Amino acid sequence: DFSLNELKTVGFSVTELKTAEFTSTELKDVSFNSTELKTAGFTASELKTDFSLNELKTVGFSVSELKDASFSSLEMKDVSFDTVELKLGGFSATEIKDAGYSLTEITIAAVDPNELKEIGYTASELKSVGITAEELNVAGFTTTDIISAGFSAEEIKETYDSFIHQTISKNDRTIILMTDGTIYGCGYNAYGQLGNGNTTNQTTMVEMTNNT
Image (cartoon, rainbow, N blue to C red; front, side, top):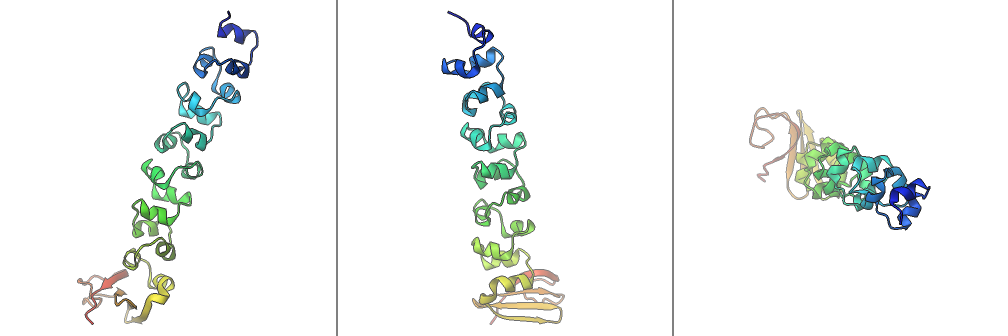
């Protein structure tokens, strides 16, 4: 017998009107705002059609609630949610990467190095944001991957001590012989002493040709 606007005018609350099965769209049309609708118990999914993601963020919906409302990681990035919030809200490392966050931003969210390996980051890329040789080893990167990433001889020795057969440091060069027979070296290489096929001095470990 009475319109929604009349019911609002005489003082029915948003909660009472929701109980009477008025929709969020109908309530918005009579000037109830997103804060009032959220307080009345409407979910992010119910309000998604009528309000922008930024409005829903402003009234306090969590990342988890917004994810449940099918907002994507890219949409969340567009309204300035950070990687920590996305990870805590249930987004995967792949979803966070696909949103366009940098590797540095992703590592701030304490994403496991194993996950980062699985979504395509190389040992060199992970080293550039502070992931250690030991962490890369635990994540499943090969010895060659890790050594080629540019870790120092000391870092390699610390990580692979049980796999190192012999270390030689002499005449501005360091040579490491692994128990599997592979050899790595760095340092002065003007005459090709490192046996890696060129005469460029190497500041990081490179695999050498084993002719023994």
